[in-house]
Image 1 (cartoon, rainbow, N blue to C red):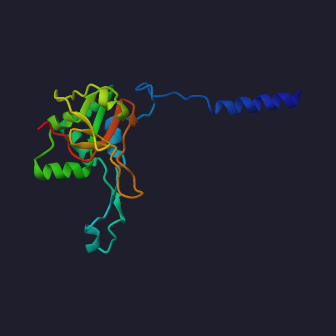
Image 2 (image 1 turned 45 degrees about the horizontal axis):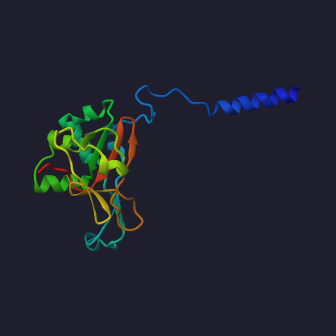
Image 3 (image 1 turned 45 degrees about the vertical axis):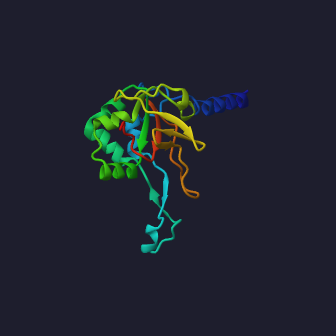
Length: 191
């Protein structure tokens, strides 16, 4: 009898380790990270040195680092658009990498609230559903989906672009409490 009691107590204690814990009231996903929070720490695609590496003693295919989303996160904060992305959503965000932001700001101009809003669509849209989804942005102008060269594009930017070699690809379908993030290598612009 004592042995049965010990077994029952052990099983009950073990089972409680797998019992659900209290989750945040913010979401059914319980990821405890909004889109704005996730973008600040999301690891982007891996980059190689390319031709620039030769000058500093690196091979072209050597790993250089990750192309993250800190500049987009900063632009969202400075324009106030991050407040929207901390809301309930759901939202789908086409997040440009740091390189995409730098290139846009060098060649076109600063990234403002209107451009940030142009990268955000209402609703939770998986990358596999982009072709049939309503892609009206928070800026009021829709982005355009197309399938070309066996790749999915939003405007002229590839969704889920593959990187060189064994390094991390552009992340897609990154789930957050209030939506999803798809990374892109070109800043979206309505012009």
